[in-house]
Length: 78
Length: 380
Image 1 (cartoon, chains in turn green, blue):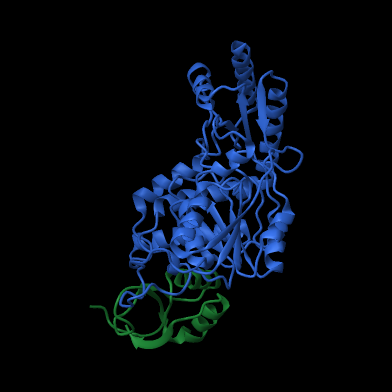
Image 2 (cartoon, rainbow over the protein chains, first blue to last red; image 1 turned 180 degrees about the vertical axis):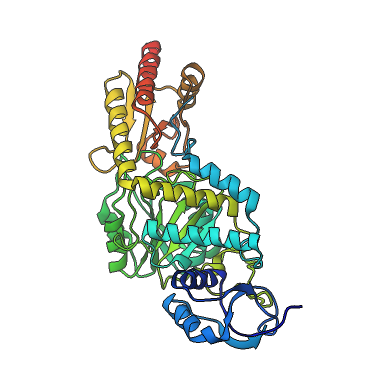
């Protein structure tokens, strides 16, 4: 498996919220990408935004500016 | 074929619609089902369509744009998700069965009270009747934006003002107007806008949806897989997922999104103006033909629809003669609008409906006028 690095991970209530954040991040140069929801966050399916942990503040600002109510924000090795 | 049945479905679509659908068929995975390239392509397509439709209809939030398979499903979702025991609804004689049958079922199964604003012999409503019929228990007014039979346009903004003044919601059936007339949910006070993709929007069949004003809570009509919150035993609360169980029609939505892009570039006002000109040309052309009776009120706003009869001839016979002898496609019969036909006095005869689109030409309209003139002459 790949080497794990510290990531900021944001989970969402809906896929539409995830896409809204992805669109906002892409438009504003905020790093990260959509990944499957890690089971450590929640069993089941879904997608979340994963970014290098040093971009945490930029990601949180992007979530806020996109008008999205995040389901959860996590710091983890992925 | 001269296609004048655009109120049923637009047959000629912008080329970008088919191209988008073919591309989607060859590349899309399933939206909201994982994050591999195909799944994300589908998610991006669906999300892009939500944003485009929200902008097109002035729906404040893209996540309040819900996709369905057609407007009948949209109306079922809206009405069954808003009306419960003890509630009342006000509707009109202009409605299609996609509004009427859900209301009749809710009346029978949940005891929902339904009141209808009557239409006169020209298919017009008196707006004072909306006020007269509203009661404290009235939860909503559900109203077509334009009759699918006469083409008469209802002043939705006025109806919304009446509803809101009494604490009721306005649910609009935009089957005949989405894409052909400007619709602004906010300016017109629409709480729930129901639309179909395959008529004036010129998208594919199997697409439609609802745009919901923020704060309007609709209970889910169906529940099931959503790709999120999978271990919850109940449907997720958040829009759009709340009302979208099961795999979306990603390929159709790709086509619909392309169609909306085409219309945005074209301008809905241009479509409205062209259809109005074609409608006027046709109505004036048939007005002098002996034995032709045209239904509806043409003194105000009108959709691209003209319904008529030739003498006392069965509308099906006239429509069939137009198809077989002239290659002109029209729609006879009841048009799923039983109360409207009763109001017009055409329950037995039905009517022949001619309906136009952005792609209809003046030459096609003139050919239809000539055909009717010949049929009327034969009838003598």
